[in-house]
Amino acid sequence: MDPANHRRHSVSATDGRRRQWYSMPYQDGPDERFVWGATAGMLRNLYRFLAA
Image 1 (cartoon, rainbow, N blue to C red):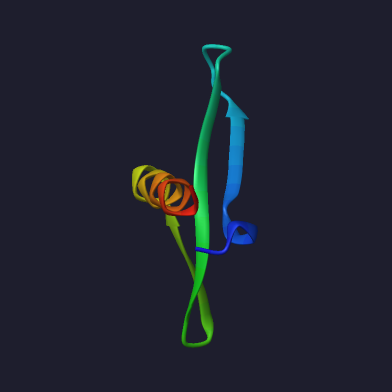
Image 2: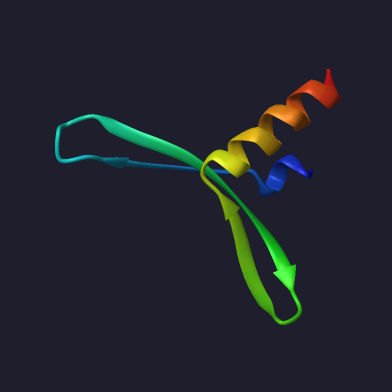
């Protein structure tokens, strides 16, 4: 839940709109893996709810 791990990404889509999403890294043994998309968004919202 460390906010330093809440990474926000964005790209320009072919229709000219900006697409944005979150990812959160975690260690799985020697590998770095990511929670991303809707799951990361839900974790981000949970973090904001618990921090309030």
